[in-house]
Image (cartoon, rainbow over all chains, first blue to last red; front, side):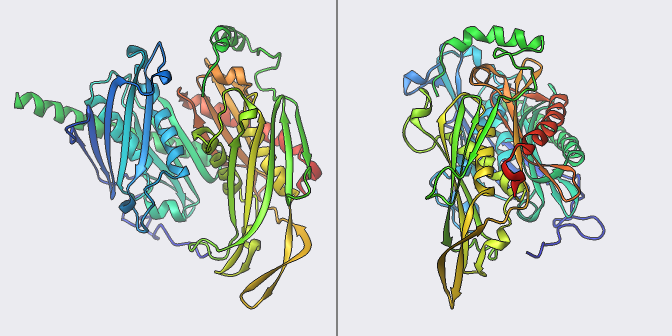
Length: 241
Length: 271
């Protein structure tokens, strides 16, 4: 198969970015009225809405755990979020991503504070242009904060890919499709720990280490934007009162 | 999945042992359990293998089917991996469609085979753009005693490397399947190694008890590249906890050595 050229001779990516640049990012917090917490993220053309409910009573009750709350996460892509209409039924990919998103967020939440309850996180991808799970995680941690759920840290997430023998930060759809590897990662930046790590494709150990470093840099940038979004959101609420 | 109360009692013991470099079943931290591989155990499947990893027992079967290629890769065969956690394999497994654990496992095995280019999918093209072979790998878990990912990845690989694909004759736009077989074209041997994090220790090939109390796990697949170097071809973190950078780099180093050890015991050297 003829590989599409993803990096120009002067080192620019398809959308003009340098290898270590993330796309323009925009957060909106508290965009849904019914949910206890909500957030919207735009990461380039990737757009995700996240709603959080809880801590709340769990049904069926036998799933409840006596010494902590459980976390349930649902990652879902809208049929119109991609070029070819996607069936709305949850795919195997979405079931796996729901699991890893839950496991990426759970280390941040003080689950022991809410025994026998559930916190439900719903992430709906309304437009997909790569790194949708990362966008969902970054937005979900803001939605959890909006719901007033005590957390050890925010969770920031970004992906690193290898395209044309170059590692690039914040992967868009075409880089994911035609690239040589894709590595989504999530971390709690203040704790300096990794809560999501996946990789497919092929990398040398050296490239893997470099990808981790690049991802770390990206997560710090996302983290900064997350904190800015939270600050301005709560400042506005204060002013309204 | 229901968890039994016994591991909560054993939790302290497992953590204390790990702290002093020991494990509840007597292994060292980086020791794998005994691996037993049998291949070609079934006649009707074009490829099959069973793997016992300690008491964990899985069977993988390979079937071929003529199908249409994906539009974005019109000249390549298709690989499809599924897993069934049979209710007979564990008191915590229930009948029904694959749950998130079975789906995650199948997708991690799939990624290692795909990322490591285990199968030469170009050679599975029958009529470019129209007909290709789909390779179905089905993983069945019969006894769950921990680390299903590594056992399943190994069983799938062994079933594939011993699989025979039917020869065909192309008549116009029709594919005629002959009653003759040739080996499935294999490029490489990706090996997946899973480590559990217990406190600040990393344990290779976690047992069921260790899995039930671990902070989290990481699975790393390695493949030998054309440069004779080990390349990483899949990674998956699982579980509720978190890893530090140092732990991930340490896991990579351990898994690299272990994957080479496991690759050596693959039947017929993979040929």
